[in-house]
Amino acid sequence: KGKRAFIAGVADDIGYGWAIAKSLAAAGAEILVGTWVPALSIFETSLQRGKFDESRILPDGSLMEITKIYPLDAVFDNPDDVPEDIKTNRRYAAYTNWTVQEAAESVKQDFGSIDILVHSLANGPEVSKPLLETSRKGYLAALSASTYSNVSLLKHFLPLMNPGGSAISLTHHASQRVFPGYGGGMSSAKAALESDTRVLAFEAGRKHKIRVNTVSAGPLKSRAAKAIGFIDTMVEYSKANAPLQKELSADEVGNTVAFLASPLASAITGAVIYVDNGLNAMGVGV
Ligand code: NAD
Image 1: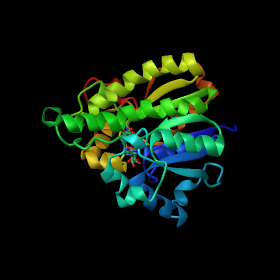
Image 2 (image 1 turned 120 degrees about the horizontal axis):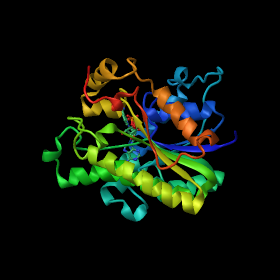
Image 3 (image 1 turned 45 degrees about the vertical axis):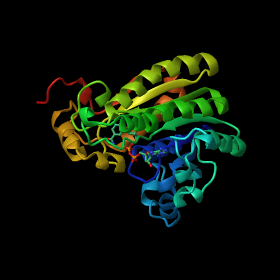
Image 4 (image 1 turned 180 degrees about the vertical axis):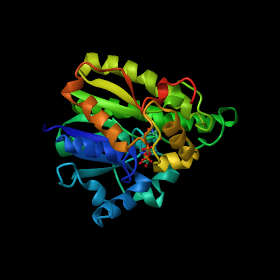
């Protein structure tokens, strides 16, 4: 009770970020979100117009409240990193303080501290290309947006996280096994994210008593997943071949994040927790 969460990567009511926000809100946490600058205006307008009201309903019948929405672009750490064309871009110029460092400073000014940090974002401009056809630029962009963004978020929010707090990201099993179609260096980005989870758990644990974990989620037809292109196939494949033959709901991932953020998980850190109906346990589909 009384915990405060900052969830980076919420821009609609269908992705994992939204479900995580709901599960944390249902468990009594105050919700702050960080929304990608180019998606912010539509997200805020839709929220204000009540477009998400039905999906805001919590198990007790009340509506999830988002206390504050922060603009965020997690590929930039501070204003010095921002190139001129982005600075002057109409969508970006409409907002201020959206680099990671500035967002953390804003949250600190507004609320002082947080207890829970969630990274639910990824971007790989060449995701639909096989690794052998991925450019250096595309590969590094995938790592920057999907992996270093997590290091940077933790680095900048750690000073305002209360001891005992928890940081959680989302990963994909393509880090460990081959998922043809999950290209552009995104498989590499997730492998690095999982490795970072262990190192960050050590460093943040020793320094600040913060736990760091990542949830390896099964397929969900989110906006980002639709952009990859084979999400319907993955949903069907999982339903046909996983130990639990049901569709995965985003809430199941949200509830796991709420568990990991809670004192019930007080000895869990540096872990990759699969929430995928058990699909990762299978060697072949049957
Ligand atoms: P989503 O589209 O709901 O979430 C991705 C979010 O990242 C979006 O809100 C987007 O605006 C934001 N974003 C992109 N670039 C950003 C940047 N530079 N700065 C800030 N925000 C940025 O899709 P999702 O599938 O719910 O993805 C959330 C996480 O779940 C990702 O890490 C993804 O890899 C992971 N995941 C998804 C699946 C799946 O099947 N959908 C499976 C396993 C893991």
